[in-house]
Image (tube, rainbow, N blue to C red; front, top):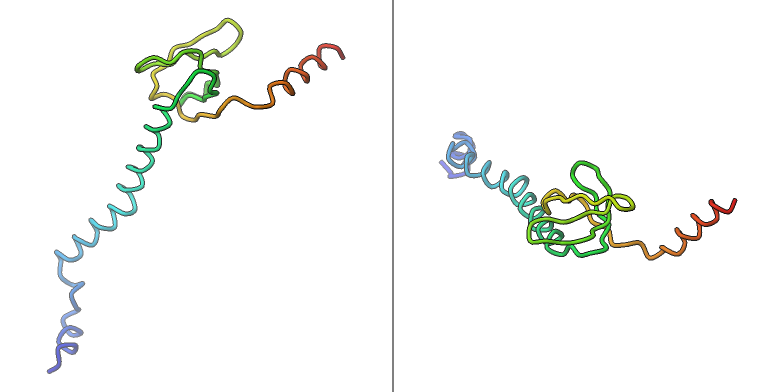
Length: 114
C-alpha cells in the first residue's frame, strides 16, 4: 500500500491528539495573547508620554486637561479651579491640545456678545 492511502485511512496527522493541542495553542497565541500584548505595550507608551496640556479621558469617562504629571499620578483640570488626581493607569485615551483654541475662544465670546 502507498503511504497516502495509509494516511487517508487513518485520518492523517491531524487525527493525532497532540497535534491538535499544539495547533490550538498556536492559534490562541496569534489570536489572543499576541494582540493583547501589543495593545498593552501601546498603552504603556501612551502613559509614559503624558505631559502637561494633554487632553485625556479616564476609564470612568471623565474628560480633563493634564495640569501636573507625577511618577504614578496625574492631576487633571476638569473645570475652572477644580483639579482631580488620578493614577496614570486610569487614563483611557489621550488627545493633544486642540490647535484651534482661538476658534473656541472666539466662539465663546460671540455667544456672550449675542
